[in-house]
Image 1: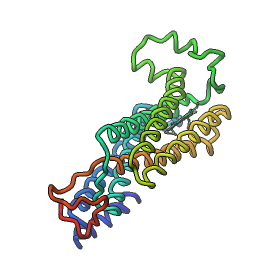
Image 2 (image 1 turned 90 degrees about the horizontal axis):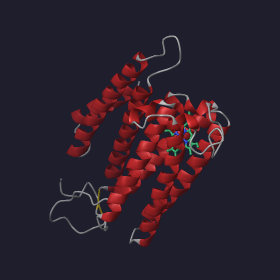
Image 3 (image 1 turned 90 degrees about the vertical axis):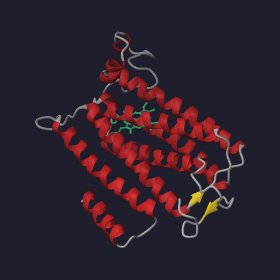
Image 4 (image 1 turned 120 degrees about the vertical axis):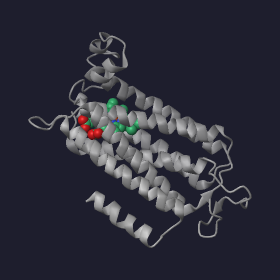
Length: 262
Ligand code: HEM
């Protein structure tokens, strides 16, 4: 169904030459990625789901990571179509910090896939301590290697619960800098919404854990993660200086129908 929902409009876009050239090319890339997503989904399902509802956490993380990336690309495409070309009046530091924050959030989402993939939310259902310790004994016994940390229930849960606070710290610092800058009202509101969103997501994550992962809160936790990533991409878009033609008018927003072709 999703394949059809992408391919039919794509055919129309090319046949009728709808939208600017970059948009037609972008939608072709999206269609290819949707095809790839289907293939990755098949590759993931192949790793399990025959007798037990289990798939490889690595493949689950790949599948979720690609889905979230596709969502980010579509969000950027929609923003560029809607707003045209934005010229953001910021120094390099702010866009860089926004990219770093998105990367941290993305890695938290991938860690979440490992938590879900290993069913790691079914144990250590206390917060902030895990089995009475800050660092659970099971994790302390591990040989320090990334593979061991990603394949162990205790360490995966530990990383996911505490990396969330690192993400929150990055989001707060970014928001403070956005508010101190010359950012417009939309960008400021976006930064604020991201702070509120991350705080709600952390609360929701803690309750999902304490209630031993009921399907409703767990599904909401996943949906909020994607929405937060969308907000982050949007904020990045507003903070990053876009590619604009050398002698373009010095405007904050250029209407795509009147803007010179890129
Ligand atoms: C920035 C904050 C956070 C983000 C973006 C985030 C994101 C995610 C994502 C994307 C998943 C995977 C969902 C799935 O594929 O089914 C997940 C799973 C999970 N997260 Fe979080 N999370 C955050 C914070 C937390 C915190 C603070 C906790 C608890 C202390 C937590 C507990 C869980 C649990 C228990 C699961 C497993 C749910 C399941 O098995 O379906 N999360 N998280």
